[in-house]
Length: 187
Image (cartoon, rainbow, N blue to C red; front, side, top):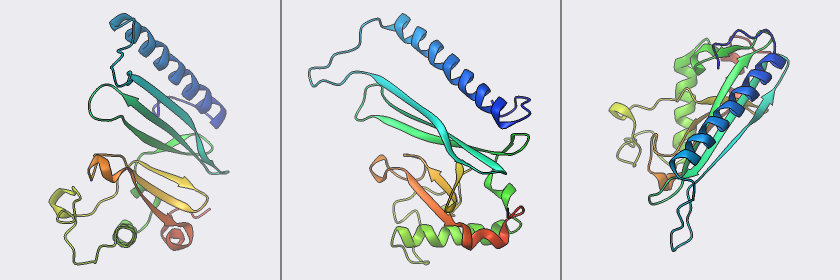
């Protein structure tokens, strides 16, 4: 969807709405074809999937869209996640990774790690993977699943990305005041 030739945010919204409607229609037809009656376990769990889409932030320069999915397809528990997409306005050019926003990505990454460690009560010397997280080579990173809100920028790790299901989604929020000096386009 992000590669579509749209000229403005109105066209972007229309493409996004149409894409979601088409996906749901195709999914519904496939689900009906595979199993016309839902599974009825004695403990009351049926398969389901819920999808929510919307705008989480919009300014004169950017729009941040999200799609959240929650579903139960059998197994121990439901599973879901949220994906964010940030677009520059006008023109609706997608910002595909958080590094595109900053002049000093090393400083922003260090700031994000400090916030993460503080939120999780981890000292700067505690190895992340020994604390129960799953970072490659025990090195902190941010995900490209990021968004913008009134407070600043946030990065979202969905369940199972860097920790167990029980840990839940992990948000790392960096306040606008702390990152403003590193923004390529501070407005």
